[in-house]
Image 1 (spheres, rainbow, N blue to C red):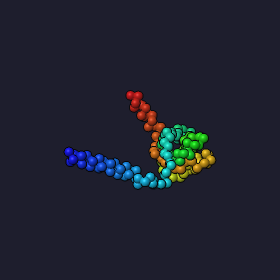
Image 2: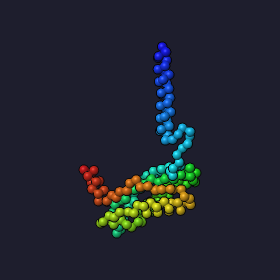
Image 3: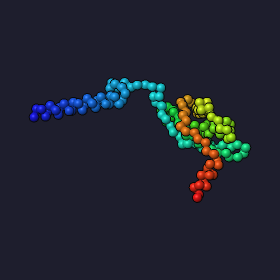
Amino acid sequence: MVRTLFIGIWAALIALVSTYAGATWQSGGTPSGESKQSGFAGLEYFHPPAITVPMISDGRLRGYVVAKLVYTADSHAVHAFPVDPEAFVMDEAFRRIYTDGKVEFDQMSKYDLDEMTKAIRTNVNTRLGADLVHDLLIEEVNYVDKESLKNQAADEAK
């Protein structure tokens, strides 16, 4: 009977210590409430929908650039701001890709993504009148040729 009571107390003690250690380890700090501060504290990732930008050359539609972007902003500032910055981010990205002029359809070249994202971020913050958007990330960029869309539609119709 004493042995069973001792084993029960021992099991309860081990459970408490392991729970405490697991909670401390998972939070990444000490249990005293001290938290690690980083450069990303308070930032939130916003995932606007993908944009499709028509690429026109010599008065003809050649294809589409499909871009999926992510931007970071201070969550408190975004929610307190009177307008949603997402529309401005999408507009600036569309304008930048559409008017870039670096897309040559016979020989595709790489975009300067760093310059493009910095310009979009700067233009958005200037238009909003506040330093709201901290960083603009490119999740995905694709080019879809108009002819490949026609061929795919014809294949699906069969």
